[in-house]
Image (cartoon, rainbow, N blue to C red; front, side, top):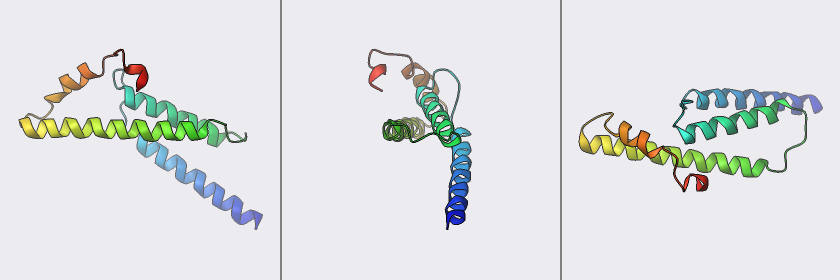
Length: 111
């Protein structure tokens, strides 16, 4: 029975790493992409946790929730960008707006 559980754990860890890489490959690590950078940081935190033999960190639920909220914000931002491009008919036109909107603001800490 222990061997089955151990095999399931190995498979779950392997699945996690596959999904983590798929997500990482879709994110932009360049400066100015705050949601992408935050997600990359959280993925690194999750990887460190998975690779360690330590107990579950007390703040893991907060980290997971932060990941989910940040991903929602990124998806919303990209949706708005795509919608604006479709409405204007000018693909890439909102990149300048996007880059300007990514500048730090007084409300950046709330994100």
